Length: 260
Image (cartoon, rainbow, N blue to C red; front, side):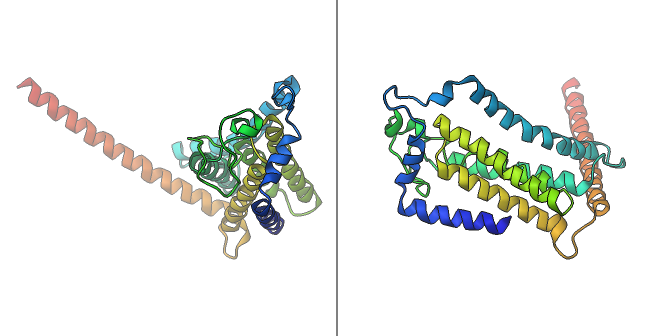
């Protein structure tokens, strides 16, 4: 999976650096120049598909976040799902679609979305994928947040046992991400390169976290990971109790001084 992602990413990076106008040409396939709008953006089925593409990954990720939260609250209780699976799902969601994509790249890259460039009715100048000097102030085009969310399904697909079922699930996850990101292209929300690189980044993050948790020699077991989470929870609770006692003591001192 990583090999193919890197090959595709390298090929797209090279081609769309040499021919940056290809991004405009692909987006132009979905632009109605005579009426100056993106027709699919106004259709009900496409908006519904977009909503589902956003909900499905979160519906899969939420149990992992819940399992970790409950373990932090009740550190001595067993987790209701394998600890490594919970960490993999929650951490890759937080790092990929969360921090790297929406927290850093989309805020700092500056690339205007297709609907904002002058070629498609906007006022901004088109910027190729590698340029960070665009006029977008935040929540920009590079990379696709919804594409990253769709490609994140590679994480739960990778948890299936090795074999044909996992292969089918991985292909399905990539297809889901491509469809979610592709829909944003048809809406004028992202360029082709935004979607491709969102997939490459998310797959890379999933592979690295899997390497840490599963695929390296000496990788921890579920029991070891769960024990570590429990220990962290106990330390956090101990620290929280200490802070609470200090706050209460400081409040009592202030009240005592105020009453004199």
